[in-house]
Structures are given as C-alpha cells and as structure tokens.
Length: 218
Image 1 (cartoon, rainbow, N blue to C red):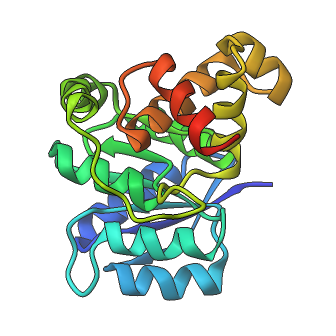
Image 2 (cartoon, rainbow, N blue to C red; image 1 turned 180 degrees about the vertical axis):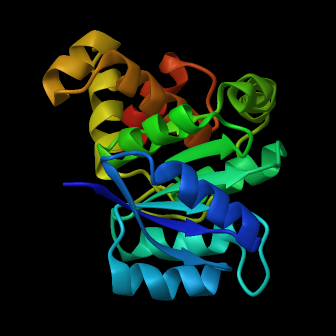
Image 3 (tube, rainbow, N blue to C red; image 1 turned 180 degrees about the horizontal axis):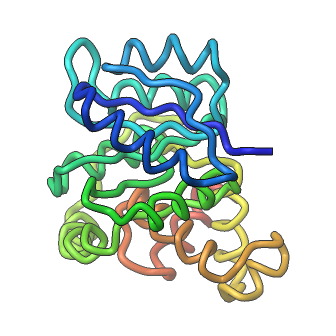
C-alpha cells in the first residue's frame, strides 16, 4: 500500500513541484495539498495521510502550530518540516511540537522520498546540515541552569511512545544495536530517533539522556 502524503506550503509552485517529484515514486501517493496550517488540519482530518510535508512560515496558521495540533490528535500523521530556514529556534520549536523530521527544501528528491518512508515506518530524522548547526546550541542549553518547573507528575516534553521505549532502553544501558534488535529497528533508525530525542530533551549525549529518563520515566 502506498504511503499517503499531504503537502502543505503557501506557494503553489512549490507544492506542485514536490507533488510532481513524488508522483514518480510507486510507493508514495500525494493525496492532497494545503496552503496554510489551518487548511492542513482540515485536510488531514478528511484525507487521513500517513505523512505531512509541512512548511514552517505560512499565513493564517504556521507550520509549528499546525504540527502541534496534529500531534495532539494522535501519532498519525507523521510530520516532516520542509523549509528553507536554518534557524535554530524554529528547529527546536518544530521538534518540540511533535515533528518527526526537519529537512531543507533543497533536499534531493530521492532523499525526500527516503525520508517519507523513514517517518512513515516510525523513524525520525533531521537534515545533517541542521544537525551539525544545532549541536553547539544544544550544548549551550545543556550547560544552562535548568528552569524552575511547576510540580507535575509528567515532564512537559512531547515524547512519542516509540521515543519513550528507546529512551528507557538507553537508560538501561542498551547499545544502539541492542535497542534496534529489541524493537525491530535498524541501527540508523535508532540513531535518527536519538538525535530527535536529544534535541527534545536539550541534552548533549547518551549519559545526560539516560539521567533524564531515570528521573522522569522510571
């Protein structure tokens, strides 16, 4: 069965171009197009896509807020932010909102199709250029004093069920290969998940992520 994709961008030419490229892929079907976040929410409810390619900056409702509202509805659809922006803050906001991926619009069509397949299968990814750019920022966040949080039985970080599973296994000392074997995931998919988890938790490495998990998830 083909992966159902909804394209969301306020520029019709970009939507059409992406749809044309994806039409060449036999396992991917573009089921709809939207010009802003509000239209995306309505069409997602009607069309039930597996993956949404979401622009960040749009009128009426931007991609971050639309992603947040989609994530609140449930684990599907998976959202990939597809944008020209490298801005650290937008990346972090998108990931915190529940995006499963963050890619630049100059991504090769083959890489875009592979990314769609990855998130549709439960994986996550961030464009390598953005990951490299984001690492110093994550280091600064991790080194900053933690903010005072109101009492809560649950941390206010939107981890998906799969991310929680991976994080709990990491906290138990499992390697990426062991996590992959336990969850039937490739090592590459586990690494992609961990990149997103580290970004969400604003931690630099496995040790800090494990400490967070032991405090909040166990």
